[in-house]
Image (cartoon, rainbow, N blue to C red; front, top):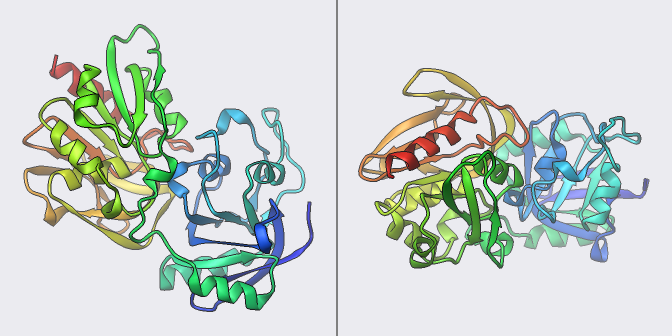
Amino acid sequence: MSTTPAAIVLADGTTFEGEAIGADLPGGLGTGEFVFNTVMSGYQEVISDPSYAGQVVTFTSAHIGNYGVTPADDEAPSVHCAGVVVRDLARRRSNHRSTGDLDGYLRSHGVGGVAGVDTRRLTRHLRDHGAMPGAFGTASERELRDAAASAIGTDGRDLVATVTTSSVSVHPALGGAGRRIVALDLGIKATIVQQLVELGEVHVVPASTTAEEVLALRPDGVFLSNGPGDPGAVALVPDTVAALLGEVPIFGICMGHQMLATALGGATHKLPFGHHGGNHPVRDEATGRVEITSQNHNYCVDPDSLSGIEVTHVNLNDGTLEGFRSTIAPAFGIQYHPEAGPGPHDSRYLFGRFADLMDGGR
């Protein structure tokens, strides 16, 4: 593993020193929007989540890479995050499932990063000043500062178009489930597909698929997946969802939740530093039950901008909207990740609610 000196320079000029890890970057530098994630395990699922497109992920856990990597834990065939920052990258992997180490994994996917960083200081800075663009790598400090000054964040960017599939794929149902689900791929994770095939046959389609094309597949339900970037910049999808409302039951997760809200006339706004981690408490308003949830989003829906909905879930850390259901059509959305890749698994019951919603429409 390299011991080449590297550095991070944020858009406001704040600098952090470390050593290069992962792939060699073109010109010795990379750029992206810096965010932090508080998971203590599941780093491979985080890195391979398409929702991180355009972002540099800072892990707050001190030791990353301890148990190596395995293809079984990939959430997508390729990695879309812009980079990775860690305090201590494990030099040895220790797990019977592992087939490689994290540094080699990053290299194989062309992703660079920086280790040996004071990630506690970096995380505090992002908490105080918000997620922000920056540059990182082995280039000179002047080159990094120039790149950081011109780096762009996720605001106003339709990153869904960069990660969605280009063709339709069909995933057979497990256990004899007879439903048919069309999943609009806004950056869908493999674990989500694994949950959906337990409900029925899943047709994963590009984000540009029209409502007419979706309905031509005669689905029992439509799923709107997670995805990266600014929901306000995503083209076509809100119109597609609006045309599907009332025609077929709909379930949206993360970006899908935001697309459903947009289709219902709602507005979204960017959170200061987003929700990224596996330990966010969320209350189910119907039962009062508190779930510990896995989250990854920079934007959220303003509940006051929506009419004809019932708030179903609320984040107990900051009071933001985490779930709603439409009272005028069979549709509901969840801002967090009930598929739990990585865990916890407290919220997987929501896939059962989707099944009930589809069965109610038969």
